[in-house]
Length: 192
Image (cartoon, rainbow, N blue to C red):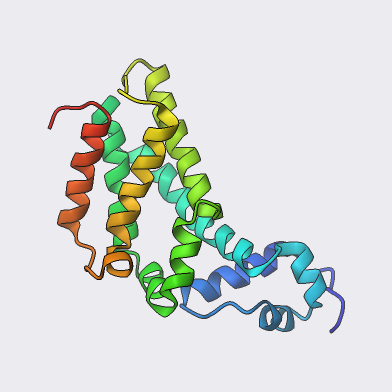
């Protein structure tokens, strides 16, 4: 292996891996290092292991979606939180690269998407908690339970709908996601 050139950066490695993931290509750190003309040790120093890299790729797709949902959803309180939840999860439900990722290696994909130790799951619960706290702080929401628990349950409800084909052998559907929105509304103490 050659040493990285001044032009090759950790961001180059991330961008190349992200493009590969979006195309549905399996990410091999050895192949990625070869492609970038850097040593494997350098790549590991830059991105960590494969799980960490894929976690960052998934987060790089989720975070802008979360920000978009917050920006375009009108209202406040229960309606606002449910609207943000709906926007994010409907988009995820119909995101073709994610569906392909799930079907290529279901067990690995579920681990990366839903494990309590995964980058994506932990950060999703964290930003959802922030959303709830913002609404409480603004006086628009008074949830009937602990905010951290509520946030965690909301994320798990979404995951059970989004990945129902892998978890329970049932194709995910828009109607089930609407039912999930109703469940979230109830958890938030809203009227159905």
